[in-house]
Length: 127
Image 1: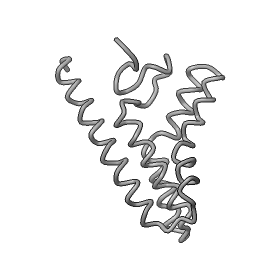
Image 2: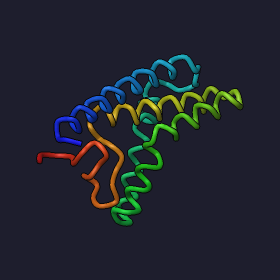
Image 3: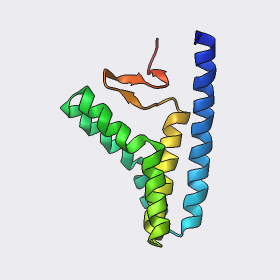
């Protein structure tokens, strides 16, 4: 795949991230999760605590980061909330999806095991 084609794919992945972000927020607003706005905001950023896994090195760090930043993690929590009729779990899942979408929209992709800055959306920072 050429450089231009790869850039086009990355743009589409970032647009997709923005749509997942917006959808997650809309779903959260409909779950009835018993959270104050400030609690929801804190929980929105909770997946970023996975950065601490990098203290064990880039391989473990990437694994820990990716585990909680794949769309499936938030979707699983959202589904679990629906299955057990828990507005809290459904709300957490929606926030987790929104967070992952927000990261993708901003260009923060899933991490490669080589370095924190190596992602599926390209290298972070100036190239």
